[in-house]
Image (cartoon, rainbow, N blue to C red):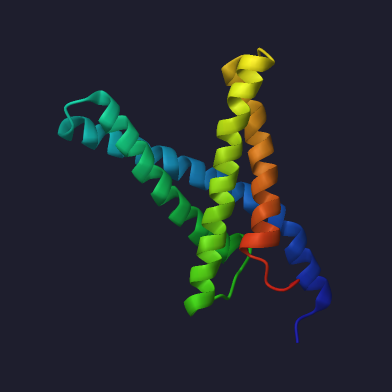
Amino acid sequence: MLNPWYSRSRNHQRPLKFLLVGIWNSIFGYGMFYLLDTLFSQVFTTRYMAYMSALTFAQLLGIINAYIFHKIITFESNAKDWHMIWEFIRFSLTSAFAFCLNLLLLPVLVEVFHVVPKIAALFLVLVVVLVSWIGHSRFSFNQGGK
């Protein structure tokens, strides 16, 4: 049987693990975007198609990468088979919600409150990290109160 103090200490480490995995995923996602944009700019004739395709594929790869690292490192999930598929769907829904929240709030901060876009985006990183943490810890990887 595991020591209950050890279990509590692991739970206290989750926010830090969440942030570290998030930093890694940001680096990974941007790296994928950069590589795909470079590749697609050689394939597509319009610049718009190249960077939007790169963004789409990088986002998909980023979600898969984030799921794997959060599953293994942050939340140490044991889900397998159908449970893992549902866990991935919940993770994707939480990620999509956080992304949509960012899409909705950025123009409000910029257009309504006249915040400089780069400052607004920086503020929204904090909001999205908090929303993502709550969503992933309570919905995506909820293992019945573990």
